[in-house]
Length: 287
Image (tube, helix red, strand yellow):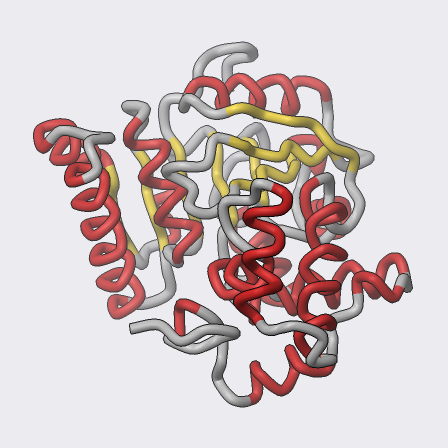
């Protein structure tokens, strides 16, 4: 890895909503990217997700057809983890499960060289914990993208105790290279955005749970009263209640503060399969 040089090859491990969104962002910037997932059905879902996103970008005027075709050609989808060996940056983007992320980080470490930057897209799990299963933990950091990744320009760069300066500098340069804006945060559960966002979202859920106001009025109050583009309950549905619950749980375990605890209603909704937009039902219903 050449110090200070532009990153020319990226790998994403995890082809879900965030993984494919990150891959698209990288490919739009002209950088080849490998997306690795566990089986062929996961790969086909990832392929369909990328195709749908690119079509949306073309219809919305963000990309022309030729550019979209070039982006598609830069993304290699595979079930073979060995395909990530040539990457200069590997981003772990599997679901927000501590055990799974540790397993994936170990697997990545078993394939790539010790000078390759290994980043996690975790929303809340401490990077220092994930780094301890990787050789040379100085090259590990958080690179937290926000949904939808092809559109949202913010990326949190999460610096663990062992993360070295070169890794941070190259990660920030890469984020700028793909047209996004990095902000730097210390390594604690929730980082910057979720430390501020989660208490707000959970307050809205508790308000709805207590029948204090309707879901529509809660959301409309924040949209018209505070200029938010999306109300808190609609945002919960968009983020995914399963993802949000995992973030809340991680933050509550670290800080033991009530404002981070997921309300009982969320647990009941998960048990009923109400995950938000992804399942067609959450606080609202979706086609």
